[in-house]
Length: 434
Ligand SMILES: Cc1cc2nc3c(=O)[nH]c(=O)nc-3n(C[C@H](O)[C@H](O)[C@H](O)COP(=O)(O)OP(=O)(O)OC[C@H]3O[C@@H](n4cnc5c(N)ncnc54)[C@H](O)[C@@H]3O)c2cc1C
Image (cartoon, rainbow, N blue to C red; front, side, top):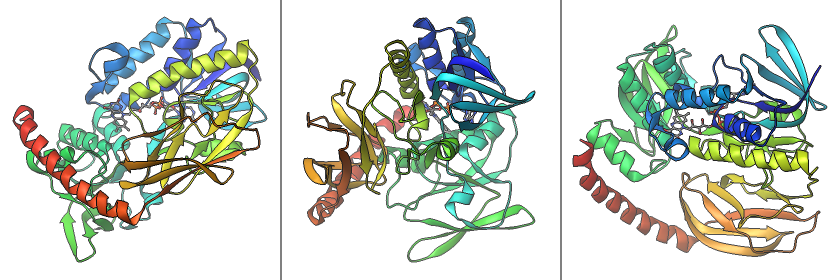
């Protein structure tokens, strides 16, 4: 058994920036554990540009960004143990599987910065041929940028979050033709302008209100997919399927190890200081609630370092009030209010599962204490201001979203305007993009 002061699990932007900040605050007894053979996290396999603007004031590709973070950590003499996978947390003991065998550590403080992953095929319950050519964007990027493998020639992308755009770029890089993007919802899951770019500039058909019904093929080879709308079905020839988005925190270990697992967020209940109910455990980055941009996770890493510092140096003892949420909410943070810490200007920040217009309500012990009309998108966060409510330790706060009939009517009109304005914007910017 090794005793350490701070264990950070995950060497992505959140974990490494927390480690760098803690080093600055004077903590040397700190170890970062990473299951991969290189530090840097998810950006390592995102071969496109779009990283580092806010953190390093430069536009970097994912791998360059990851290398920069890893180099900073090495320059600052941060101990990173690679190929070390956290497999168990029990009674404060962290168990790792490493090439040298099982290793155990006991730490005063542990930061879980495990990131998130896209929902793979088994969890999406899609029937049809079993084939290794059914992958997620993350796997496609690993093949394309890290292993330089072209897994298939023609693929269909399932899902239309912004990450599907990343899948298109990776496919283009590998020379894979994208036959179509399909989306179950009635509109794509990101800004409408992206749809027009994909449709008219990249000439990729985008099918909304469309389900992937079956993957057709034989002997592990895919020949086509069957897609269906309410009215009809059709086949698209392809030899690969890329499932994109629906990010969920890498939280199986949290679910197994802690009682205070929050099923709404698929992560632990976390306070405004990123602190979990279990003593000495903190969570930051995408492990809290699915995917945000890398720079947000990087800055969150810095913030959690300050909270860890308060916990160790000032022996901060928290007193929590829980925030629960209904099924319309895809995630919210924080999900605990620590009454012994300053409360931020917002009670919590949330995202809805789908585009909707309605009322978001905050209930304190079943009594409505705040209401707000919102027009929400699943890719835009909504913040609930802190109303200085008197809270006691046993109180329960609940978030509810209600769609009103009038709001549905209003929402449909606004949707048409949003589509029209996005199309005009597309016409204006497309000559520049070309
Ligand atoms: C396809 C794709 C494209 C993206 N494009 C952009 C973009 O253009 N711009 C942008 O800003 N952001 C982008 N992002 C988002 C960005 O990559 C993430 O937000 C960011 O990497 C999250 O940082 P993190 O530290 O929370 O998690 P990660 O970067 O995912 O790091 C988590 C680390 O924890 C490790 N880990 C997990 N479980 C264990 C375990 N049990 N034991 C040990 N180690 C473990 C993982 O191996 C990983 O290295 C993209 C993401 C994806 C998937």
